[in-house]
Image 1 (tube, rainbow, N blue to C red):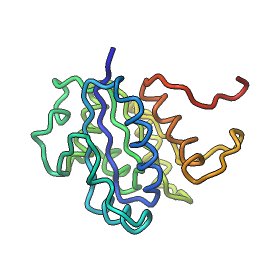
Image 2 (spheres, one colour):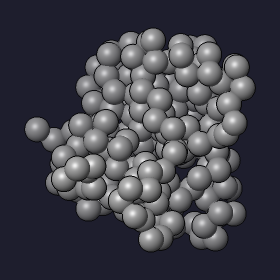
Image 3 (tube, helix red, strand yellow):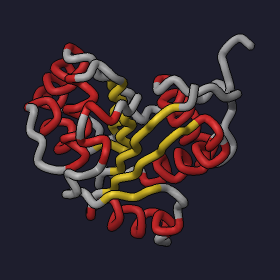
Length: 186
């Protein structure tokens, strides 16, 4: 069964994670019925600063503005399966934890939680303060998944993209997508 997925990118550092996520999703496009994209203004700024390009504007996904509350996934009735926020800033995490739906990203997160669907937040900031930890706890208790952008090394990554893929692969598997990736012990 094909999935309906939303990918959101916030202004946290770590645009490489979003880039690798898009690269992977393009390879498995046959698994999607629909794929929506939302990027904050800060996400676009950070992408350009960190990656030196604006390739996000060339992606073949349906893109929605951050204040477009007419996007289908702004309502639970649209039946989207998952939202992956990658990277997820602590500001976005805090607004989601507090139930503040002030843009399309936080509204979609609220929809995922209320509909008991997959909400995967790939948080990138470090270190965490107690407010961050408490917000992560609230989201976890509400059914969301905190997937820190903490790469693993047992696959022996050789490039930044391979290193970022250790996190992205985990997020994609959490969203219920089926693809071959490194697995410990296999």
